[in-house]
Image 1: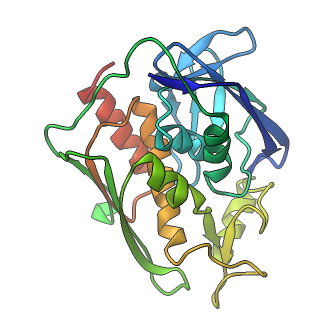
Image 2: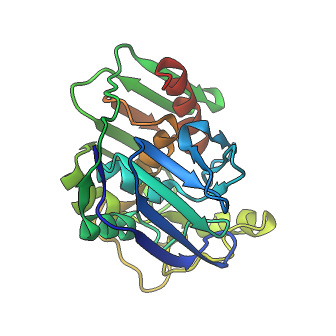
Image 3: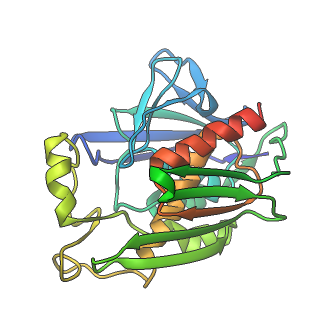
Length: 274
């Protein structure tokens, strides 16, 4: 079972609060992802009670820990195949960093791995699961597969983002070299909604790709052509960790988002109780 060789501390700004925050990832001998409160009491992410919101992953744990915007960090833990970790959040949010999962993946890669006793449960989907939202406009399915694979489609017709689709075999190498580097994105037309709801106070062109009617705002440029849809793969992987070790399957998402990701995670928890 793979855990961290040493403790990692990552500091930055919370996307929605705009406040300084930090997170510590520590070696563990317990399989899975665990969050510690100030008293050192641990709760597993599989015990999470999830907020229903398309724009962020937020959840609370039985030990009182509340986590917001943790999906990039959680995706890095899963994508880098880290099987046992304890996390201490210093603040109400996980730092947004550059808007991708790469700072977390890079820290894990540089710190390295150690072997811990025990084994992570092997989970593989044996029958398809399919979910819909918004009258079928949002779709997410998981079908049996011999490898972990994600296909994702986004449709921002009428905007510079447009319609994009990708398929990735999710391995440590693919996650580190490609998937993790995709940054979060949004439209200028969405900014008023975020302001009204007290969100994105820490958002800037340093941690998000922002598109207006013509293209990218500011001097930003894409890291690779399908960066926007690839970021959705990060979000999905991060949200699925709330079900525990992600079952081997082919995940197919069409115009999905955090809400339906969370519903699939809860369905998986029912099918694969830990």
